[in-house]
Structure formats: structure tokens, C-alpha cells
Image 1 (cartoon, rainbow, N blue to C red):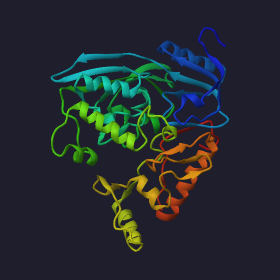
Image 2 (image 1 turned 180 degrees about the horizontal axis):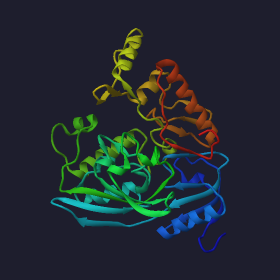
Image 3 (image 1 turned 60 degrees about the vertical axis):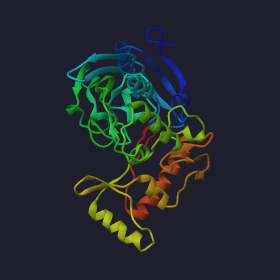
Image 4 (image 1 turned 120 degrees about the vertical axis):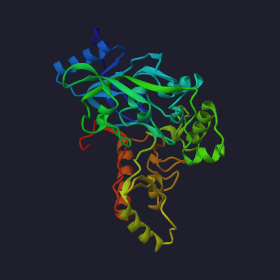
Length: 355
């Protein structure tokens, strides 16, 4: 134990992840202030340790051997509401705040802009990293800026929305500048008494042309997430996952036409798809997984697919990280063999030699 910083040694990580899988961290620090974040990084530098930044543990698979460096959990709290221009309310939120609880607070205050992102596990600090999105809404729509610690320049700075380089499930934080920045707090701009965003088909059909309240929208989104086994804090084996394990692949229209020709000969009537650009379409990964022969509740050892949604790989009870990886590889190989599409995983893989 290192008294100044409360750095713990040999801490089990499995209970800090939604997968409930993973070995021990050689060193562990729960940082509750920006100063503790910086001091933790200094400790790692002096001791020549790798650093892994842990948030809510909802988008990560940790290896069975654990992590030999310092696991730094950012636990910065605080929510500050400020009047903005016109109907805008600006909100500054600490990276360690629970995301769904924050969404709930905003909905109760009748602030629109993140209501469709209800029920998502994890902390606020994780939302800009993969540009969290669901049911037709993404955090980049309301995000204004991100306060970060820059590990290259060894200082705190604020990045504008434009500097974050947002795209579908991506940002500079998980692509070009991966591991460079530690998110400390996030600024959002929400709309006072704004209408909910109802563009997702399930929401449109539910509300049949009328404009629901933000609270109604949140409740329906949470109900849908629960039906797919992807609601935060719902418990059970289906919840022992990292949510959607694969990104929905984006392909050219020519690739879609090629696949449709092949599948038409096999009696498949059509491939569900959504335009993202004039020549690019998104195909639901869950649909591809099911076409490749995997089904809800599929099991391989102690790993399996959710009984509610084929996009979630789950720990069916005492699964090892290796079992999750093996099932992931089986699914990817089948999709590649059958469709020539490379399914890209969403979670971060920590403590593995080959990721």
C-alpha cells in the first residue's frame, strides 16, 4: 500500500467490469481528484508501469492474467448546470458520474438531447471515447467540449467538439490519439423543454406520430434495452457482457448488391441496411451473426450469446476471458467466410499479448 496515493496492490478486476471477468491489477488507484490522476501517472512513470484507464468497466474485456501495470480508475464527480444562449442549458459533468443516472437527472429537468441514450451502462467519461450512440442519437450531437489530461504534453487542456474527430462509434480517443488523453469532465449543451428525438423505427412505431415527453421516451428506450438484455443494472447472466460486442459494419453499395445476389439464391429475401453516405450502407451485425448460424442463447463452454440479442457475447457463468475470445473468433471467422465482412469488436481488450 502506498499511503500518499492510496495505491492498492494485486486487486481483482473482475468485479469492476460488467463481464465479471479478469485477473488482478498489479497496482490500482481510484482517483477522485484531478491531482490524484496526475500523481497516479507520475507513480507509473517513475516505476516504468503501463497504465490502463478504467471507467465503469462496461466496454472492456480483461485477460485472465490481469494487468501488470497500474489500473487508474477515474472517479471524478460533479454535475454543474448553467444557463446558455436562448433555450440552451450547458452542463459540465465529471468523468466518474454514472451515465444513466445523469441522463435521468436531465430528463427530469426537461432537458432534451440525450434521452435516447438512457439505460446505457458506464460512466460519463466513456461517452466521448466511442461517441456513444443508440436509438438514433449520439453524444456528439450535444457535446460541446471535453476536458482532458494530455499524457504527451503532461498538462490539462480542453478539446472542442471539432477537435474530438467524432464518427460512427469513434473519436480521436479510440483511433488516432488512443491512450494519449484521459477524460476528466465533459461539457454538453441541452435544450430546455426540447422535444425528444424520435427517428428510430421502434420509437416511431411506439408513439405513432405523436410527440412523447422526454420521460416517456426514456421509459420506452429502457424497456427496449431490457428486452434485448442491454439495460444497465438489470442483472442476470444476460447482463454479464459488454453490451453490443461488434460494430455494425459499413460497406459500399456494390458489396451489398453482391451479398444480396448470393443470398437471393439461398432464399433470403433481402438484407436490412441503412444509408450512412450516398455510397455507404450499414448492415446490422446481429442480422449477419444470425445468418451465419448463431442464435440467441448460443453457448460454447461458459461463454455464449445473450438469450435476448445475438449482438451481445455474455459470461454464462464463470467464463474465462479466453472463452469469450474463442467465441468472438468463431463468429468473426464465420462472417468472413460467408460474407467477406470483417466484424470489428467494440470492447477494449486489456492484458492480452495480441490485441
